[in-house]
Amino acid sequence: MSISLFLIDRKKLKVLIPAYLLSSVIGFSLDVIFDFTLKYYYYIDAPIPNGILSFLMETFIGPPYGMIFIQYLPKAKLRYIIYMAAWILFLTAIEAVFHINRLLIYNRWNYFFSVITYIFTLLAITVQHKYLFKE
View 1 (cartoon, one colour):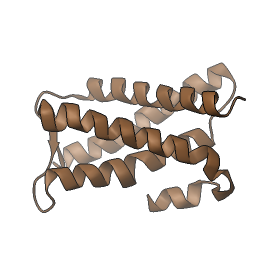
View 2: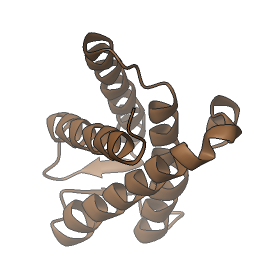
View 3: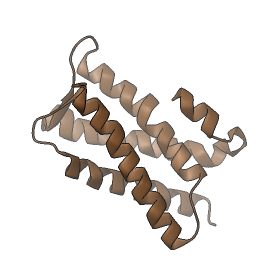
């Protein structure tokens, strides 16, 4: 999250906070479904309990990226597609670091599911932004 403090324009918080909140809600919801309920993946138990690590991830790691994503959102369709693809690769790479370092353990989860999740989340944030701030 600390890096996001340098990358967001604090004057645009009115625009960025909804992206943060929606990213957080989607992240928590997906963790409840796929982590806690279906056990498709989980965060390591030690030294931080799974629920606390999930809370930290969905509060301080994922949602700030949603704010950065919205702040630099291009208006042209082709640029948006390229921008979205770059973000999906970036987010998947971050997840891969957690997975490779065994901080995130897959049971029935894989990177394909993550890519679908990132597409859904980034599209939801985009739609929310366009609805709230008609541009």
